[in-house]
Length: 188
Image (cartoon, rainbow, N blue to C red; front, side, top):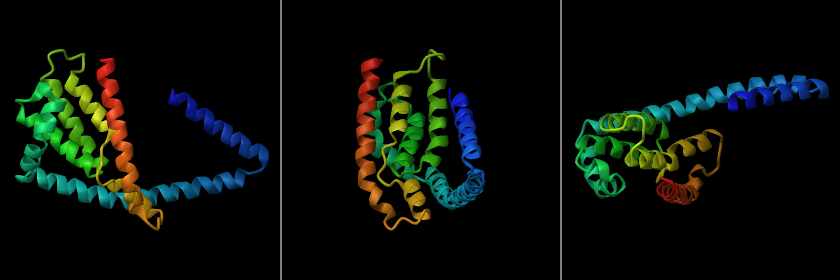
């Protein structure tokens, strides 16, 4: 669907720029936005590298085991099918910790790893288990205590108070998690 929508938007934009005599402004905007995108990517790269490194170090220490034990009651309630599988619980807790810290880029590979492990234990390979569905919902909602990526973006764009987003993010992610989980259980 998007493969059809975006080319139409681009064609309409170029056509409008040509017919309205704003082709020079369009060219200027294209080059400025590519430059801005590269600068934003470089700014975010440092944050991503830092938190990915911290998560890798934490995975090699007992810190993740302690956090897994802390999250264990929640994980057992949300994922009753994997109560006895400590390996999958550890992968899920690492993903949840990365999401809670607002490290979506670090959480993605951890989430893929957890899903792969859950799929290995899935008796019906062509159907998602309840635990897999709940995991997808939680990742989509991405409950965050510290939205580091958003703060980094706001900081790189010159926000006077980049951390002012924290409280609204808490409200939005909690509401999204509740709405998606209730919808997940109702429809499944």
